Image 1 (tube, protein in one colour):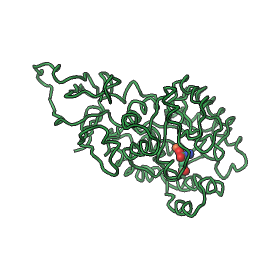
Image 2 (cartoon, rainbow, N blue to C red):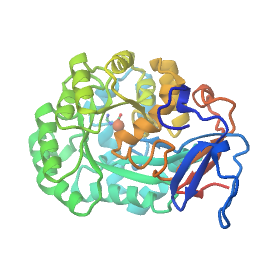
Image 3 (spheres, rainbow, N blue to C red):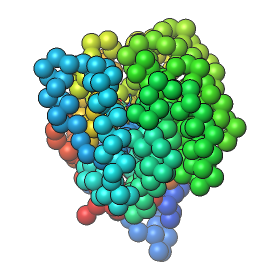
Image 4 (spheres, rainbow, N blue to C red):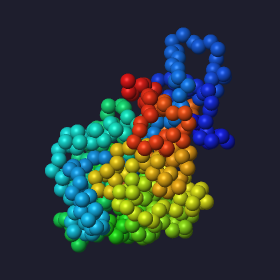
Length: 394
Ligand code: NIG
Ligand code: FE
């Protein structure tokens, strides 16, 4: 699959890819390959398989302590996600478990979740902090996230999400907590190079527009791009604020308004839809996919992998859900975990399409047609992952 072409999926039939070191050097029709292959160049057959760019999961909370299975039971008896959060459960209960875990434990517990994603062809993943909500634990989470990328099998992009929830010790003092995040935590995170972007949760159970704006101003001062959990449960106007700050992405967006979508189009902000959270919270209000299309706002899809609202470790399942629940097309879904997901991470020059000059991240699939990637449920047709020019699975 190549960048935008007139043909569906940008597909090249009987294509070939030339790789040198970790880069794609050439992509095109096999018939245009030189007939004489120079010495030292090895040729691999993909066996006629479909090849796509490495998949990108552009929104996860993969690193955390504990789980929330009992909260799931509670929700099934009719208690809402918001009620649980207001009673001090929800995100705050994961904070307690994450503070108690060592950095090694966080790496170890996230490992199998990451392995499941990688086995499905994920070569770039974003991981957020946000279950520490104190300086040391936020840094611990970000270090754990960076360590998960050290093996070279997957690129990890990190986001600082200190403004995710109000920790118990700041109850009733949201502004003081934001002061603390901006004055004490973000400068340390930036100085240590632990975050590639800054995120926040702008919501009734998260932070107000004014508080989010202060976080964004600080991010700008520190030279970090922003993104936002916006309009998931209500329309506070977070998306328009994010667009004003040139946000890489606005994520969730079930309640986003058309004027905010126009602002996203203007600022080039990617709409990240998260069907796992929509499904798991049994939401009924869908993100306005038609309006994103009409205004040419690029749509990305991610797992939102987290213990409370989306305990998901399959990006392929999200392709299926984006199609069945949000009426996206399988082609839009695939673009949403490749090209547009790369843009949501500010990495569009490096990954997300098969183009000369980009990182050689691609996946060989045992499928007859690319729509199969969105069609099957609970089945992994990944044959082989090439990460930075190297085979990363047997
Ligand atoms: O993206 N919306 C806020 N954050 C997460 C939920 C995290 C949790 O419940 O632990 C989300 O859905
Ligand atoms: Fe999230």
